[in-house]
Image (cartoon, rainbow, N blue to C red; front, side):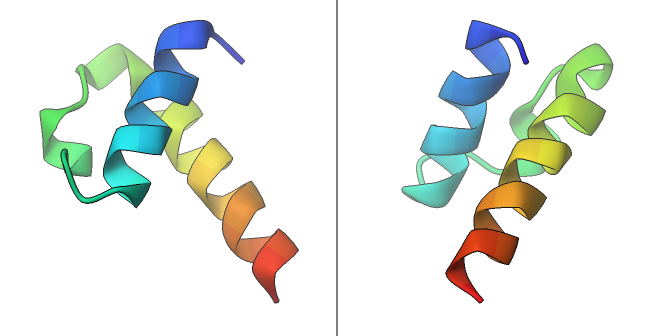
Length: 42
């Protein structure tokens, strides 16, 4: 996973950004990171 995708995922978790703010080429990577975190929390 790229550094910038991790930054976007962190900002989304904090409510500072939304997935719509993420560049198109990074959206899948950011979604994967968010899904991984969600699964860890279950």
